[in-house]
Length: 108
Image 1 (cartoon, helix red, strand yellow):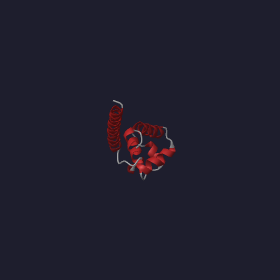
Image 2: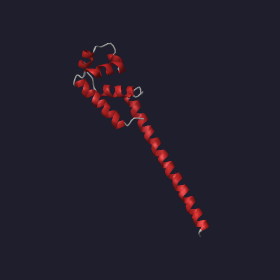
Image 3: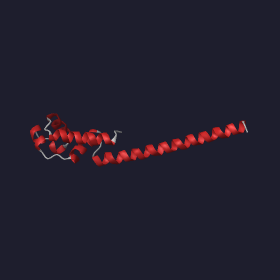
Image 4: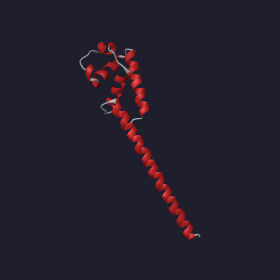
């Protein structure tokens, strides 16, 4: 899963390119945003385009239906990583305790 901070930066970059009338971004917008589908580059670059539009575009680039979905899945993934790390720590602690008990059994 992409880093959420990187996704935010990508959205801001797309917004900046739109504001700067960077023509290559118009084709990207057209390809990912249905409301721009039948517009020429000049109209896309002249259209109202907000950060939320750029965020939606980034979400779609990464296979999400919306920015909210990408945000939610990011947090779910982070929670799962924390849970796995916690489980891993518990497993390592149990293994260390077992090794300690074995050492104490052999060398009382």
